[in-house]
Length: 335
Image (cartoon, rainbow, N blue to C red; front, side):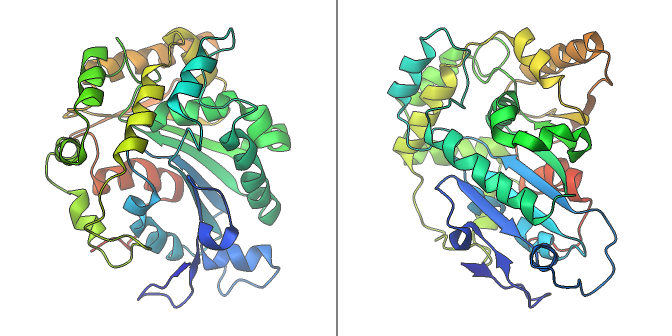
């Protein structure tokens, strides 16, 4: 599958051509493909090559962020985007919760699970393609914990890349908490009520609250640049229910998770939308403070905490918080 843009005749390669598992979407711009095949770049590179590894929020996938692919192609240096959208990746919530009862730390990444098996080869291929690329890891909403658990499993996920700490440029936590459900996340009563009343209609109401009905995802979904997405396509309610049950089962202490986050070698950013109606702002602040304290204890720079006048998530707000953090502002945007 390729996406042609009006501004650039070069196609952007997607996961359909890379043959990667469901829940892992890979996009590469023309400069990246030229670099990995040894072809000369058409113009002088203005920046070092970069990769954004992004864990999206609950009940969403890469199709909501397809306009980022157009922006990726506008960059004059090698750039790649990896979107993770299915933390269970074929594992049922029941299997997840059963494993959680073991003595092992709670994590979305376990050695015998499909995602843990499938993701490292995808990332290895990108590192072989462009070894000097700088990586930004980012998570939005529940994706905050998703990307943290990815970093907790870093030896398996990133392998030899850990030998060069300069590889990891930035870690971004946007509109979420290290503990997705509980005192420092979404209240348990809210999670239980959401699960018990989950339907196509309630998911629609959820997304209205996510965006405050401005910068609505519906406006983005109607964009013809979305690959294989029908505007009237219904949400996958069973998949959303399984994800919510799994995230609600995570119980590791906040202080322990913060210490793990503080081991990241690059810059750490925390983005807190002050009008968030999904993850309580107070919970996000407690999570950010725990991370700040952990960074101080580790003798490293404190996280950069950015408070925005945004709801939980709009396309424009997440572009500024996540995409631009990795690649800088790009003029090519969704109409």
